[in-house]
Image (cartoon, rainbow, N blue to C red):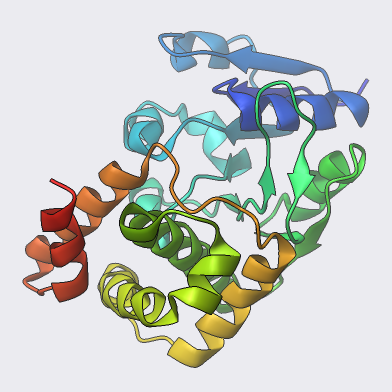
Length: 254
């Protein structure tokens, strides 16, 4: 029997990973909100992987209580994820940027292949391939950082611009490009502060447009859009930078 896999958080995305690992032959142990990680770690001492599938708002709390023996097999998949989120763990987790959509009652919809980097990259790729979800392994840490920033640009730009114009990502780029680029500029300022480095703006936009073109009808504004806008403004305030476009969208939507 293959080594077990722990999935922390069994929402739509967590359930996809659970199904993938089950289909590839791993016993899966789901942990839900309120379950004691320490208690379970004494029963599952050597899992093949620990998939942290909680939402981004819950990630910090979960990582703070992560058992030491599970640190070497962590897999992180949250939106708005950057290296600073796991810097205090003194380990190298496997990180995947999710580019498939899973809604209740529907099959997974792949937009583009999901990039993954880290010691368990091949294991994650095999598990998702078993349920026909495309994954590409990224060997270089810097390249994976760029992939994470591209995903953050996609999520934040589409959600925040969507607060002003609604619609889908195809219309956002082709009919409201000036708005989209203004939001991108503000979001990228914060991303560069969070990552403590500069990025090639045009390169990131080119990569983001691959995802736009992968599903041009994808709706811009999810239910998390107001919270994403406020979180980005709060981070900007912490860094002492002014985001004129995002501030104007916030004022207009109050």
